[in-house]
Image (cartoon, rainbow, N blue to C red; front, top):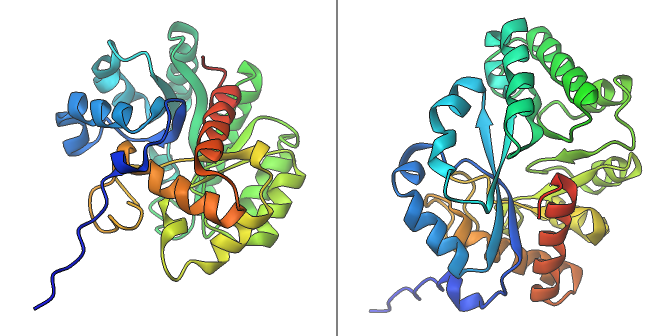
Length: 273
């Protein structure tokens, strides 16, 4: 009777310090409950920088103090399109005030459009999206984009709002080469998640082939989208190296070189040290 081959441990990738997970939700669920251990594992796997995304001002108020002693974690704050129906002028003002008060908040996000789940109507989503883009423009802050089943409309809104050649990061990119090329042509950055490792995701792997490494970031989007060989498990930053390894193979790059390049790209994009 044969036994399944054990999963490789992420520490066995031996990646150097300097990596960056550009998009995490460490204030969610069991990750928040075991934050110290999660961050210790991420450090042991070469991650020096993490961008924690708060999905609205209430989550920020409730959970920001979890990270008081963790300077490696910076913040991203905005109202997710799923929650667009809750967005109002007071909420927008609260977000702007938080940016003024907290130097750890480095970008507006994740904001955008989600026509897959459609938990808020498309019209309501677009209104909240445009309002937050306007706030980002006024504050001269980067934006982190969520777009699912809404690619054309998302691009239409961004270009209409004057975001060509501004600091825009397309989070959790899952499109093909044509869309990747268009995003890059607008001067934007792309963040690739663990789904690039999935067997049937050839379109994303083809897209990765044309991405300029200077515009590439990587992310876990934890606790979601764990890469192979941990697909189906709860994701965490320590697993980011498996995503880097797959991308390096696709790009025919040394994995440590890619790892450090994406880490530097993240720190440059979000203006963190």
